[in-house]
Length: 283
Image 1 (cartoon, rainbow, N blue to C red):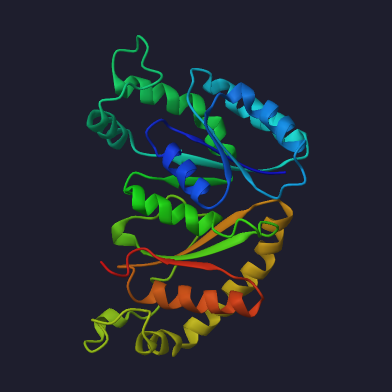
Image 2 (image 1 turned 90 degrees about the vertical axis):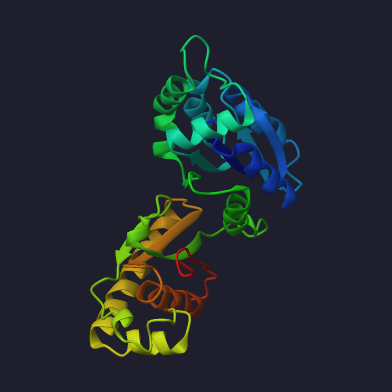
């Protein structure tokens, strides 16, 4: 059976992820207590003739310490398990709880939502460290989160190989937290300093031709693709279901976008179907 376990901090978007998986045709159980994870796995195996993947949304029911052992037990049964951990900055979670007027499930006698969040974060740290995918929703709205989930799990019928996402970003807007490999493109000549190229982006042939016209770019591409040729099979052998490779430049509009597009084209030549995200190209 194919399971995706969605866990993480309360208020970070677990229910929204569950709703999106359900829209994609998954069988989803929301707010599942951690001790029931192995039991649901046993029940699902009796229905092994169905190819429908299962999404388990694990809530903070006061037994967050039981999440990691329950996941270990499910994996030991032979199930294919992908763990998604949803994170968010504490001030963002406090604001969300203030907006919804809901009570944090771990508040108890801790006295404040901040204390409850801090305790939950500490106790879930082992789960976060072992998660296959970490999504930081601090700067996401519900539509952004939905797009991210569809990007990762949209091809629900083809999950035998690692899904590779290629991303571009600008360092001045912050390094994305939910990536596996970051490559810095700021050493390449910058089209920003060419007046007629400045308004364009790395999605245009003019910028792609400019960035690709330097021997330094060709050397970088040769070494980078050789690295990916080495790493991708290793990640597949490790059972990784998702791998995100991010290319950064200063603003995220020119060099990183052009290199990301070229890398995605190279991956397609290798028979892969990468997802492509340009986080800051419109900024």
